[in-house]
Image 1: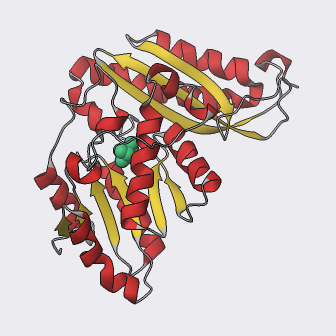
Image 2: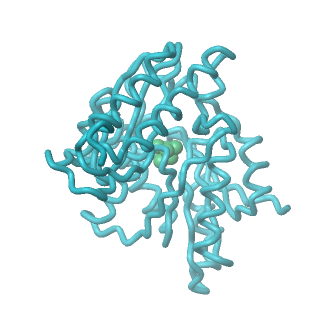
Length: 295
Ligand code: PAF
């Protein structure tokens, strides 16, 4: 276990990555807001697989630009010492943990990334401005770290889709990898926010995963049946639903007559007590007839 180098300024980061750049090794980036858990560890491993002996950089930065008013910016856990231990265990080379002033030296940026139409739905509808903040800081991290590959969790699926689109539309030349969601034994997707759930809420929260599985298992009967099965799982628990939708794999609308075998995504967001949770799963849609119509 080697302690990763800690960079808190741009200059320190440049110095730490100089050798790797000079020798042409690939650089991997795992952008995070800290409070690292096993889900992040799996992203780090995915980065390591892609860069071999090149450096893996983990950024730890709670980005104020992606929090709206009344959101949990102040309450967001800041646990750098524990994060460094996770990074050491996972063989991270460099942790980049800058201050807000280091990332935004001119204060609030005047030029930001406009995240486009896919940012107006789902999370973007509930958290206006969120993805402008996310894409702006991700673009800055790409500029600062200049990674060959960057790994994001599929758990934040809309974020992943938007980062991919930004890289495509702006020719950023970064290979974006979406790593599968890591779950607890009871299926709850790992999230830094799970720590806010009390014991009853923790049980209620597992309904999200069960709802997604119910949808996936019924996806061959079409969108309506799949959504209906998911809703009945959620109804049994005290979860306050923000949305439950099935989209195409790129978050676009599905055609009315979905061809059998269409790869789609189901996404859910709900409040459990004061904690907002999101989750999603891939599914393969079949024909539209209900179970009774099965031949
Ligand atoms: O997913 C996150 O933790 C954040 O949105 C990210 C990508 C690190 C940008 O602040």
